[in-house]
Length: 84
Image 1 (cartoon, rainbow, N blue to C red):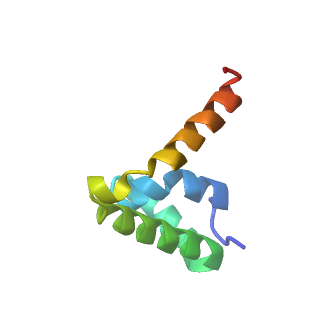
Image 2 (cartoon, helix red, strand yellow):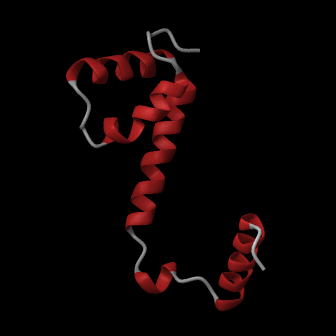
């Protein structure tokens, strides 16, 4: 879908730096040119921005997992690592 010199994958790799205004001017222009022609990447950046803003509203209490879910997550992690 992109009509610029960078691919969607490259945009995803640069997305955080783009949002933090940490890209060099030329790289920023490449991202913006890509965004102008790629509705999928525009949606991706909107979702990323929404997620970051939402996570910024969490407080320690609201971020804590219930004990049974935390135990389940630890069990899954052990399975992935191959440890009992």
